[in-house]
Amino acid sequence: MKVIWELFVAFFKIGAFTFGGGYAMLPLIEKEIVEKRAYATSEEIMDYFAIGQCTPGVIAVNTATFVGHKKAGVKGAAAATIGVVLPSVIIITLLAMCLSFIYEYPVVQNVLSGIRIAVAVLIVNAVVSMFKKGCKDVFGIILAVISFLLFMIFSVSPVIMVVCGVVLGILYTKIKGGNDR
Image (cartoon, rainbow, N blue to C red; front, side, top):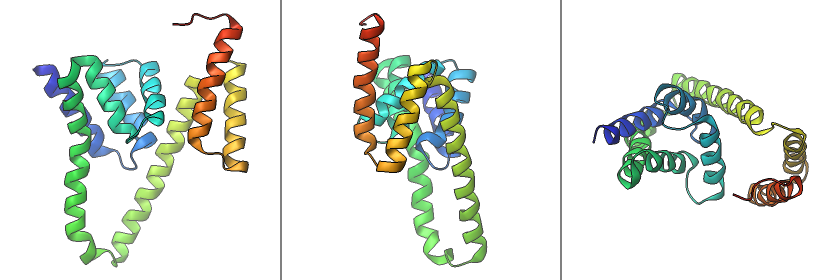
């Protein structure tokens, strides 16, 4: 039961202190789940993010569910998922009650502007971290550059790019003669 509570608390902290969700959460997930608690490795977190990108739902929720399940089965998955979602539910409910009254104030506009900048920095940090971990060879670098160009120049759907990445990764493994597992 202790690990269930620890999963809830860890993901509650992640949900409460990370603005922007998704990839902006990666640095805090790395610190809290990989470094501090050793519930997963950096590679596993990267895999969970990749799988989370390919499955319906929010990446942070999917990642919390994967980590919780790995650590403590269905109960762990539920605890981690509730933990990561609950702060947003609380904060959004409180903001919805207050924001309509204070949205026009310049200080509120400045706070929101500051949050947007901080979130952008967190996302850039996550992208750099994922690039370093995901691009370990020439194939990874070429795939990343081509994907970036396809997305930026031709607005190719991220779903199509992920599916193509999966197919190319499988083909690369087969050509290289890697293990099929």
